Length: 405
Image 1: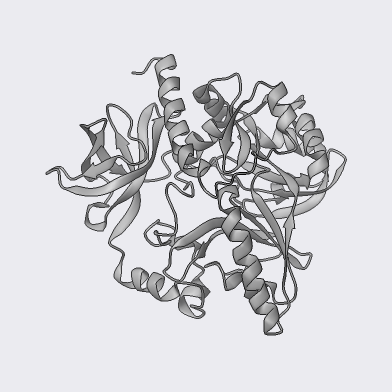
Image 2 (image 1 turned 135 degrees about the vertical axis):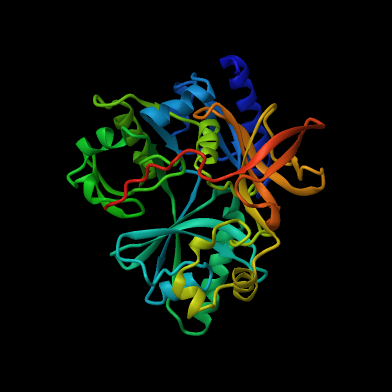
């Protein structure tokens, strides 16, 4: 059993290690960008680190495990304003989006969103995103900060191709703040500021509404923690005002939460970090993201980039698959090699940390398909020593998304 101080040190080292990949994604010579909440982070003791070209809080006064557990048990507030937000306008917006991603965008209802991936011609993942079909004649897209340097030009270039052949589409980058309120007490915090009943806003649906008197807030029931939660897009100059109103809640203990807990929470939830667990060399099938490929897109409209390769993998299976691992001993980090019991190399770890919820070591990575069955015993190379591990189901911690029954 780990002592609390040792556990916190281990988790801090692993989350710092995982961010090294993202820190270098789209690395530029310009000074780090800051969100509108930068001063709020500093005033609350935020430990700021470089992340995808931005200065972002890794943690606050609480240790990473304590902050992590607070989100699981109560509620945490994350600044995710560094994420790339866009609106896609024009009568051909759905056709445009489906030329870039694997989702069935046309099949979404108004106000409904879905996780999807941009793919390249080899079936690799350019980035992951959430696309929402609004009732206001535009699509709302949120993608990763670390990929903004390539995704935004990618969309702009494709939009120009559409316009050149007479199609109607406009890509509008949105400079809003973006806050994520995550945890079982989310509704206690948010409901008093809304006229809309949150019981009518299930997972992956979105509305534009006034929130605590601040107009034109887009509230989307989603998140990156596995907990019930929302992401709120708000005018940049009112993001701090909204954050302060949420932190002042009289109905729940809301705490600012940084990138460290965000990483361990998403790993417990079995969710990918772009640049670690998925990239342009991995396909959605290999990444166990087959469910992001809309049924219509697979069977009738296989016209997304890399469709031939991806559909062949769906039919004939890929050579490798992203899976979860539970292990003993020292925790594995991204880059640790995976071996069979006979010590043949069969895969690689892409993310790993001690789980604050389970008090066990968890990891995810890619492994040969014939060894990917849950329950398969393997060995992980950690600090030049072999540790025992077993292929495990994900999510490691059951998700608590609000689904209407």
